[in-house]
Length: 258
Image (tube, rainbow, N blue to C red; front, side, top):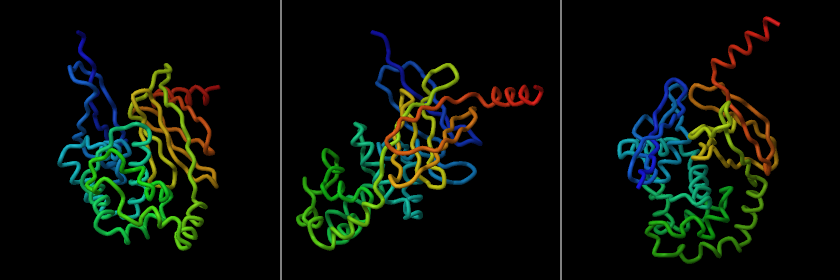
């Protein structure tokens, strides 16, 4: 029986992007990220590490580092829970740990506080409906606390959810390929001007949610490759081909000569 391949991740400075190599391994694809989870220049949490954190794939040291980062950057709380919801809906084996687990514990122990907060989330209605928690290890007694789903029917909740509807999000999907048409695994996609970012899967595919009411500029990057930007609208497929940085520089030099 042929061994399967396991992906190993390597953090590449100074770009902050992850590169992956395939090595023989008898287990299924296994990745325990141990490099620093933050961009070396900006200090921001890298999308690949955020997703690994939400799947429970980080080392204990990096899990603690991400926990501390989320505690100190409370403005990222909603986006993090939204990403957890997206990963679960896309079939990923999410595992609430650390900070995320504590957010779920609050649902059980402080439902009133959570209800007020959930109504302001872009994904508030999904959270209130319990879609996020189905099938997780969250100790919520098997159900959302009594009264939480009913909250969406109250006049106060409707007003808040109507306001939140102005912030509806839509999906942008696509693949990131190299100059030979092969998928770039672990490439990053950033919503420019925000801290919202995702990484590509084993097929080079990504899905990102952006505000439905406005255009967004996405930044595509991969270690050793020239970055690209494109203005997009939700509901579209945006594929991107990246070329090695040295090839782009040579092309620019030839352009100058002609």
